[in-house]
Amino acid sequence: MPTQTKTPQMAHRTPPLYPAVEKCSSDDREAQTVVADLDGALIHSRSSFPYFALLAFDSGGVLRLLFLLLLSPFAAVLRRFISESAGIRVLIFASLAGVKLSSIESAARAVLPKFYVEDLREDTWKVFSGCGRRLVVTGSPRVMVEVFLREYLGAEEVVGTELGSFMGRATGFVIGPGVLIGEKKAAAVKQLMGKEVPEIGVGGWKGGLEFLRHCKEAYVAPPKTETKSQRSNLLPKPVFFHDGRLVQRPTPLIAFTLILWFPFAILLAGLRIAAGSLLPMKYAYFAFWVLGVRLIVNGAPPPADESGGHSGILFVCSHRTLLDPIFLSAALRRPVSAVTYSLSRLSEFLSPIKTVRLTRHRIMDAAIINSLLKKGDLVLCPEGTTSREPLLLRFSALFAELSDEMVPVGMASRISMFHGTAARGWKGLDSLYFFMNPTPVYEVTFLDKLPADQTCGAGKSSHEVANYIQRAIAAKLGYECTSYTRKDKYMALAGNHGSMY
Image 1: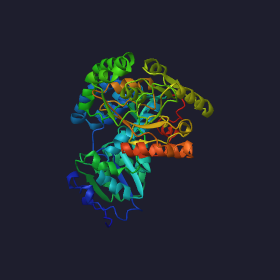
Image 2: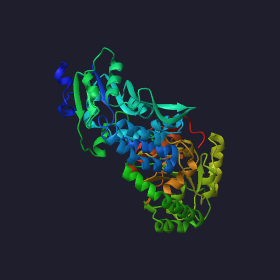
Image 3: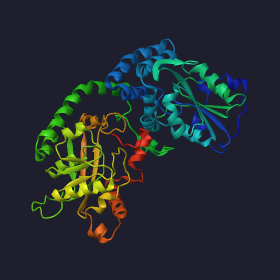
Image 4: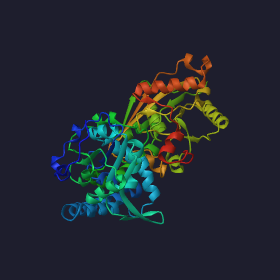
């Protein structure tokens, strides 16, 4: 599309006269500059409440989320009758006042990108990605959005609202020019570009379009309904890892429901944990069913060896939560020992099955596993850490050298409110959060015993055996095999190697 020359009439036309962004051609734009707003333009939602709510829950739990929800009607009134800036200031104060800047940055990297990417607009992304230089201006705090915009959308510059801080914590107030909306956003674009004029500007559908006056071509992103499945293939950079406890993007209604459910959830989770910890394993299946936990068993579980004449079976499982060995034992109707890495003392205390810590020292760990197999069946998760996404991390090959009697097991869980895994914070609460879901589902799928010709005893290398089992489980679950490791996950989410849980 040829570049339009800016005219006085274009500079003063009213927002409804701007054409929709879908009318903008993305062809031959590699040498051009685009400036886009975030809320309502690059992402569908113009309301920033869900993203503030994610930060509030991540930094302060349900009480901070409640504080934000109570102040959100006041913020809405201010935005309606006073100014949009005043309303945003209230949301910033309610969700971020007193929070460590490092915690905000951590959540911006580990929690928010997944939800931003799911909210990405296809029409705006097509234009934005077609340009060689990509700039974003937004009224949201820059620290909240910069990681997503730079690393996932390839933005070169991000200009947003700047937060005040004191001794490494956010004060809850803004500094500099204030909340970047209206003319302040236009001034920021002008200052950012200097004497240059960006070829394309894309604004949100509900106002804040003043910065478009400084663009050669101006477009708006009109309201449009798209389902998550339609947007799932848009990912400019796939979100392989994400953290945070909340499953759904917390709109005000979802946040209100979550807060009402929370006290009942803690009580129900306590009952479920007590049932799983205190009852004999052969009754755990029925206890879980009575308390709303659904355990689905696929395939034929191998029977217990009563003779004790040979080594036990090594159950090789994909790793979804710390509860994998417990639900495997419930599916077998008998306790099976498990080896773990750095399990919290609380989880060890509550576990109804025997857990043995590995050292991550190859020779010592091999001796531990061998001694346990001589005593009976054993469950092991060779990924070394949990994964929420429909993928499998790389399988450690050590287990393949220690037994030829292996049964691959695919583990899958379905939850609606809270994730039962975490890379940051106190992992001792993982099991509690899983059981706080209204009706959590665990699906245990037993595959056929590993064929004799696919074992190390038949001449296969340990890596070949590990890869074979990984592919078999992935195929059964419909997951993707990857070469990502535990260290990759923790570096992406927590900035460490995951040596301490």
